[in-house]
Length: 70
Image (cartoon, rainbow, N blue to C red):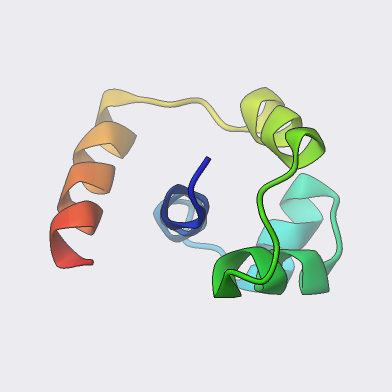
């Protein structure tokens, strides 16, 4: 998973980095490092996202718009 998709999910959920870290049950510094490109999205974090976030048509449309802006 690219960091852009990680950021897009957080933005789609309208969460701050601390809120997203609580949602994923990871440290706020981990979220920051992923988003800044200092750390890759680990398999553990991907699994947590898969359990807690459902990809909907609404998200797909949001992500397509997000990509056009970046």
